[in-house]
Image (cartoon, rainbow, N blue to C red; front, side, top):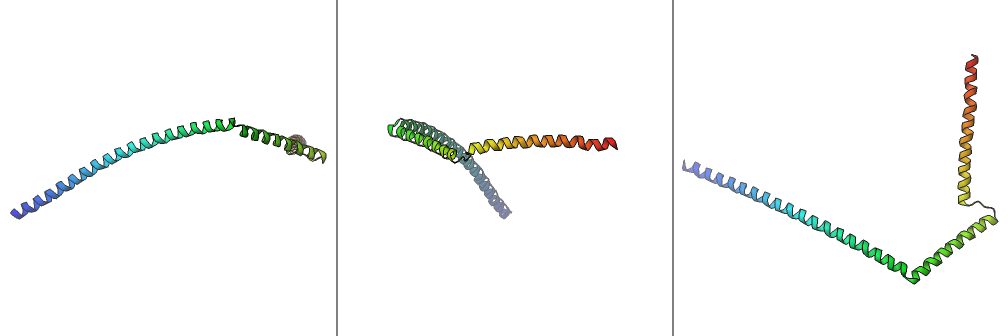
Length: 137
């Protein structure tokens, strides 16, 4: 009988140890989850602050760059060059009587409109013709 009690005591101690380990594991797991959430909040807040500072700094740099006389002059030169190229292309196309892209698009829209009108006229013409034979029959 003493052996049974001894074995039972050993089993009880193992169960208690397993229960203790399980509860300790759950406690540690909850603490780690809380720390993870806390770290995620801090990281998210820091990321937002960094993004805000970065946007503010980018705006400041853009404003500063736009105020720079060299940049202003370069932008002016680029605008002038673009206008001159456009004028040159238009003169070239006009000299050789070549339609520009906008001319072709305008003509294409007009053709589409005319096609639509023609289709409507053809369908009107077919409708009375198809109803006429059935009236005589």
